[in-house]
Image 1 (tube, rainbow, N blue to C red):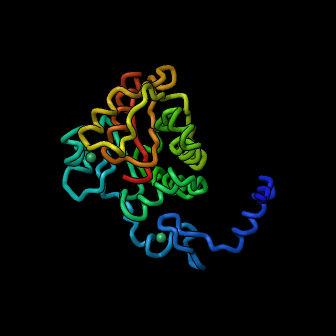
Image 2 (cartoon, helix red, strand yellow; image 1 turned 90 degrees about the vertical axis):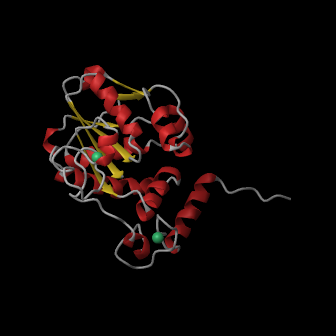
Image 3 (spheres, rainbow, N blue to C red; image 1 turned 180 degrees about the horizontal axis):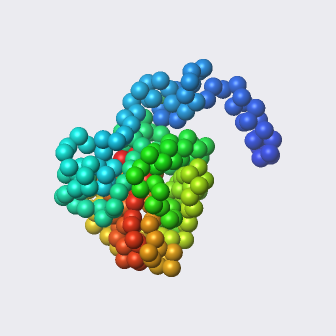
Amino acid sequence: MRRPALPAPVRTLFETAFSCFAPPRCRACGTPLFAHGNPYLCPACAGTMQWIGDRACAKCGFPTESAGARDGEGCIHCLRKSLRLDAAVAVARYRHGARNLVRSFKYGGESELARPLAGMMAARLREADFFGAIDWIAPVALHPERKKERGFDQSGILAHRVAKATGLAARSDLLERRTETVPQVRLRRAERLRNMRDVFVANSDGVRGRRILLVDDVMTTGATMADCARACREAGAEKVYALVFAR
Ligand SMILES: [Zn+2]
Ligand SMILES: [Zn+2]
């Protein structure tokens, strides 16, 4: 005879009680975290984080040492293909610890990571030259089907938390994603750029004459951001900035 399954509330209680005894795990690699300073990362993963400070391209946030990148000319990536952003900042390189952290947040349902990620993004944003010039924060819209699949909208959550932490306002009605695209991770760089053309539409009532900050968890090729920036400009935005956790 099969044993009846525990009713859901009892099961939740059981899991909660159990989790009090199990040590929390590193959100990047999964090793148990015993008493040490960082509640999210083990010392090894924390050591692999590459923070992006001031030495970054002002236009796209890519870390750089090259001359010119700080006086608005853009880095070699921007010179090759402009993302059409007025300025961008990022917290960390999308590698090692930061990449695993973002993946846990996005695909692993680790929604409590929203707080520390958004906290770091808000701190980075406050240091940016354009911080005082932002009218609205616009999360990079997720396709409704992706949202349904994943159960939550990572850029929307980050954008609203960053807004709360900085006293700015986030609006989810400014950008809309028009057609379904093949998930970018499955494509090569050239295909990504093609895949992301004309996908976003901006709400011109909200965007016209405004300075918009686009928020997303990650910017890699920048194709998604570039298309959001294009949409905002076509809708009459005065300035378009970007903030991401990882670049
Ligand atoms: Zn770790
Ligand atoms: Zn650049």
